[in-house]
Length: 171
Image (cartoon, rainbow, N blue to C red; front, side, top):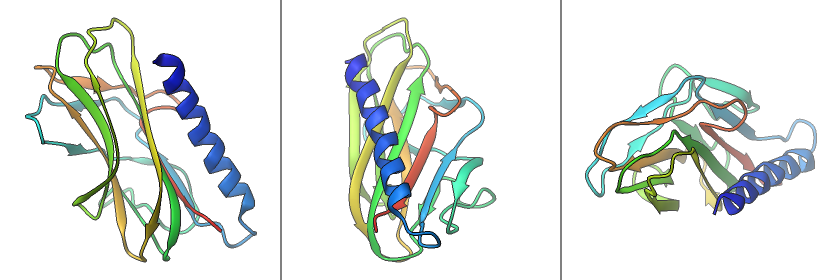
């Protein structure tokens, strides 16, 4: 399972790099954002999800992200097909329940999701979701999380890994 998660993370980074490199100069529409601190996620009821916020940008070539307002959103400035992804690392989940990561379009449509049973493992668990999706100009996407361990859990800040969120328009 851990090997699969690492492979998904590497493939996500590789696809974003390939899309980014394929863009002609001046035509790059992409962003990669992150939160520079640990994020506490409260215990939730089934069906409840919370949107993550992102206070920093690795890059943003076309104003897809705002750090002051709606910092959990990436907004498509132009219609087209986009590769969208999110990566997180939970800190040592202990107990029972589930945790999840998903991408939600315009506050209502889930376009990618991963949920896992809480294994009670004594090590960090990483999750990554990604999808290709056709967006209209003005559509926005959020990275959301869920956990029902019974206690708040942390998503750890890990440089270049967690929590990270991005999207790139395909040429």
